[in-house]
Structures are given as structure tokens and as C-alpha cells.
Amino acid sequence: MIGVDPEKAFAVYLRIRDRLPRPVRQGAAQNGNFCDIVADYDLVLFDAYGVLNVGETAIPGAADTIAALRAMGKAVAVVSNSAAYPKMQMMERYARIGFDFVPDEVVTSREALLQSLTQKPPRRWGLMVDSSAGTDALGDLNTVILADDAAAYNAVDGFLLVGAGGWTDQRQDLLEATLLHNPRPVLVGNPDLVAPRESGLSLEPGWFAHKLADRAEILPMFLGKPFPEVFDLALARHPQSVPPARVLMVGDTLHTDILGGLQAGFATVLVTEHGSLAGLDIPDAIARSGIVPDFVVPCI
Image (tube, rainbow, N blue to C red):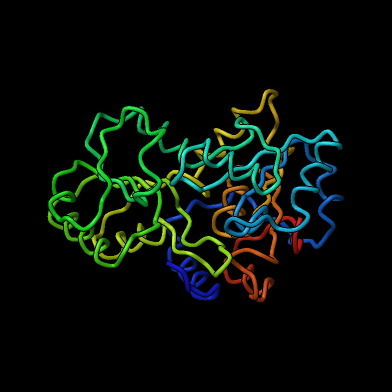
């Protein structure tokens, strides 16, 4: 689903603000040069869409910046809300578009979701995901991919929203109807409302999860930015203990990357040229959101 403009997406983020965490501090929104900013930090965490890539296309210069950070002795990692595809498929894509990340440097909300599920009783889960993504790397989970059969929605014990490719209004109606009739757990592996693609902003699982919260009065459990579990995974993955004040979170979205980084106690950089805020008045967006990054740059 493509075609949501940045202002509409931002307005929805503003409307669902009370469902998101509160930052423990605010930044100063200073403008600066990215490579100068990173000098004071040991670990640099990057969002992917809108910072490193747009859809399947690398943003010019992003791979060179990663190489420059490595040469400076900085640790780097990706912290992504991309939950639809297994890690190996993501690694293949990064390699194809010119990045040299290794698996331990890529932390996803899919991993945060799977970790959360280890603490829950076994269930048969209905899965929001494009059928082409399959259910690889979901371990021993008992899942059925949701499509257009209402009986499948009624037969499962809970729902996992991980990828919105192929999702339709009809399927959303089926999901809302079954939850109104029989409330069950809903876990969201990708809290993003939208993601930057080559042809525009795509609707992501968070968009549909908040529609559920509005219409079916069910508050889903979100695993991914801006919520803390995925950041905890990123810090745990680092071989040396890094204080939050020495971590820099770089992202294009105020309500996920920047809010999540501030909530974790990290320094934050908002990237504006290619992401979900592209074309908006950035100082105005920051003021309306009440989420203030430490730094603002056009690109990395």
C-alpha cells in the first residue's frame, strides 16, 4: 500500500502519541555535520529505511559513511523495525546494495518479538505477513498466514502483525470483526506507521495496529522502536558494555527512532532528506511532536 503523504502520516503519529513511551529527556535540535557529531560516541545505531536506504535502493554516500565510522574505530549497528523477513534475507539485501554489516550488527523488531514470545504460553497465531515472506525463522511457532478466509481469523488464539505487504481493507475488516467478537492477544512486530519506498511511503503494521486500537478497543503489544526491548537487544549484542550516554541513535522518524533513542537515554540524530519527514517543515514538526532530537542533519 503506497500513497500516504508525509503530512498525513505525521498527523497520525501525533494522534496516537499517548500510546507511545515518554522520553526521559529532550535534546536541543542542533544542526551539524554528521561525521563531527559522532566523535563523542562509541556505538552508533542506525535506522535503515530513510537513513541507509529507501526501499531496495541505498541512499548515496551511506555505505561510505559506515566505512568511515569503522575507520574511526566506532562500533555500528542497524536497529530496524523491519520484521517481515528473516535475518538472512535482510543480510543479503544489505550486501546487494553495498553495505558490509554482519548479522550481529543487525538487530530487528522481529527478534524482539520472538524473544517476547518465548515468555508466553504456546498459541496458534494468525500472521499478518506477505505470503511471499513465508514463516521461515519463526522457530516452532504454530502460525497460519491470514488472507481472505474469515474462518482462519476465528480459529487462532492470537495475532502477530509483522508485515503489511498484501494486506487489504477487507483483511483489516476481518481482523477487527473477529477481535470485536472474541478479544485475543495482538503482538506487533513492526510499530512503524509508514516506511520510505522508491514510490512513496508504504503503510506498515503499526498503521493497522493503531486502527485496531481505535475501532476494536484492543491495545496491541508493540515490539520495536520506540519501545525498549529492541534497544535492549542492541546493547546486549555489543561485546563491550556501553553507557547509554555514549550511544548515538540515528533515524528519520521522530516518533520511533528519536523518541525511542531519547527514552533509552541515547543521544539522537534526526535525518531529514529521504525519510518519513521529507518535505515537511522540520522545526515545525519537532515543535508539534514535542520530541526534540539532539542533532538534525539532512543525511549521513
